[in-house]
Amino acid sequence: MPLVRTRSQRFDDLVLDAVERLEGRWARELAGVEFAVEEVPPGERRTTAWEPDPVPLSRLMPPARGRPPRIVLYRRPLEARATDGEDLGALVHDVVVEEVAQLLGLEPETVDPHYAEGDD
Image (cartoon, rainbow, N blue to C red; front, top):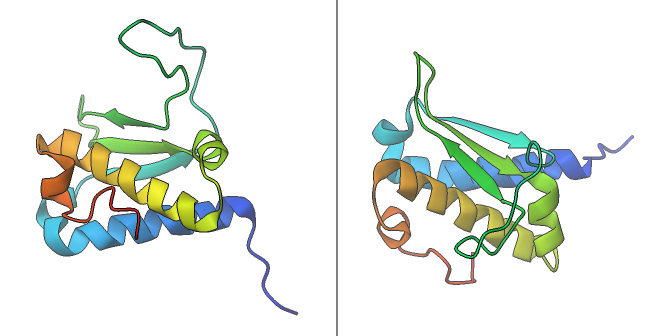
């Protein structure tokens, strides 16, 4: 019987692939960072003039009270933005790069020179 992966499991694999791509260069900096996937963002958000997108794709939770930093990706909003599986993989990678860049205080292109090239 062939193994069938659920949509959620395939998404988790995309996140793991994106993190593994960055660990080669940033292993020390990412050693204590937790990566997680949630279906949707918690609670309701309000849109403001400076924040036009009411649905976040991810969230960076800085370290606090002994808890390590955590990067959370929201599966359903990311899937809704993607046109196909390849696009979803590129989008997940870019979002992981953006959050890692924010965590490290760097530009996304510094974290990954291939950021947003579209050929991920």
